[in-house]
Length: 99
View (cartoon, one colour):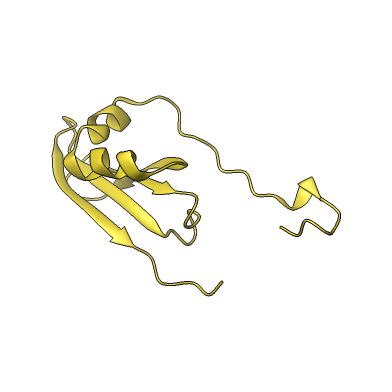
């Protein structure tokens, strides 16, 4: 954003928060996401279905200070089974971006 130019609100990008979901709360209690949230100032959550195991979903949270959903910087995720038990968790860094 240039502070010397005109502000055009139509050029902004809107990222919608997911609806309240028990999977978000279950993922919040995993170690990877719990620690990530201690650091993150602008978290954005998303829930993505995964093919295996059946009815599993991946809950991801990224910090908008360091990226966007299309090009995340710091990202923590948890794959939850149909009973909302964590199957796996991860924390990743996106590629370095020039400033």
